Image 1 (cartoon, helix red, strand yellow):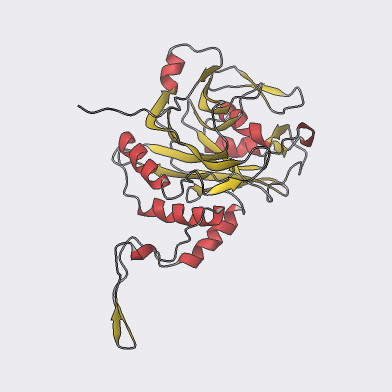
Image 2: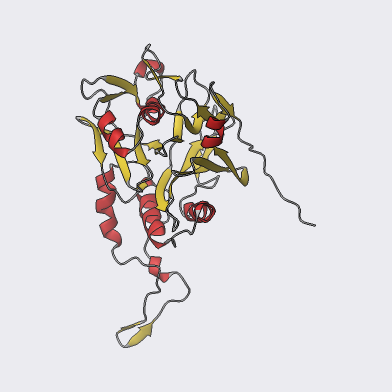
Length: 333
């Protein structure tokens, strides 16, 4: 998950959403949408025996190559939503003694399975020590964004001294550096607007915009975390408030286009396995309906899994749903 981006929004009819892009090298052929039932035992580490039974059902994207759910994002039956994003160079591991040692890659199923709202997330994270388990060969530095039916968004980052929780954030997250650095960097783009810049005189010569969009002139166009944070912050700010759930999904997908990474932009020339990084899928979750929406790089059809329906069907075992990755084109006649 190298170049992921995330933001929250709310709709006029009182619904709240968390979305994210899932950016990765290779493919997501092994990924599954996981429905984790109440009482399911999830591992806290890859090498130890520490496990916890979930109190709440969860649906989310599972990197299904492990013997325990590794969720990149998800929403639980109380409408608590969460996503983890890559946080290299700044993520700190094993910084304190705590009740729970949790691998950074396994934090989401633990938290979503135990906490019903943001207050409970903050309380639970005070008892967590984030670990990396280098013996597994997989160091998974991540930070996290959570939201719930209140509409508030919090960010949690593993820093020196433990997990730093930021309350009442602007609801935008990308990757490194840390959250406060990104907020400071936004000051460099003061004056950005969705309105055209007015004409002005320069040495008696009038200059004016030569085409639409001059209000965003000067915003960075690359795909680094800092640049994506800037673009997504202003794109969220400019996005008209959606009317309802369907409108929110549509508008959020369009807004994510400002940070989507197309194939070819990022390339790893590894001789053994050269490959591209791209936005593999885009996910949007609703706190009120507990619906989990997603599209993929190879299939732009919007798919959805309804957690309430899964619960009502009496799911008692871990359910793994294979995403349809082949382009679904509707032929019109």
